[in-house]
Length: 149
Image (tube, rainbow, N blue to C red; front, side):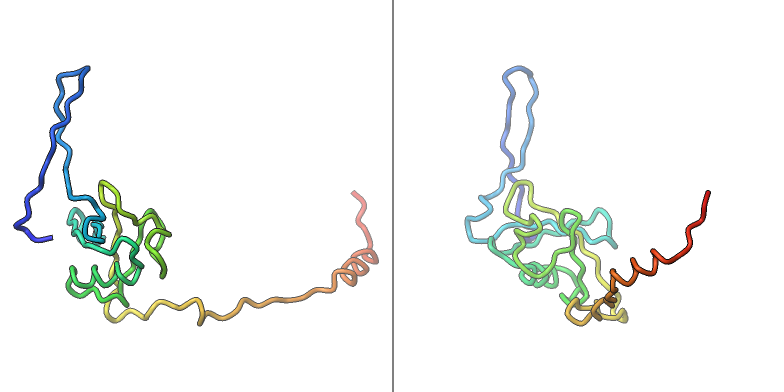
């Protein structure tokens, strides 16, 4: 979205009141196979950047668009949040980032360059699992003396 584009508005009137409301008008979100996403950088409050992603886009598509729009925000250091949930690999529709008016909002946090890469779930150690012989535990509990109140 370049700075030369102008916003267009349509006038909406209500029959029961003398109010006039202006609503932003934009091209249909799927006219060219792309739609707009508003990106809010958490380090720059109030600064909104619009990126365009394919209608059936993925998290990788969004990260590439964000990397092109922000200096020093490569996909490997981005953390994107949509609707309170992290944007994980897969379709954007899984986290509610779909063509709509107003455009969906995604929050961006960029990890510092010297921060360690996020741990991949596939590389995380498996939780330790201990097995118990429940019958033996019950027998041991039955032989314990009981305290009288």
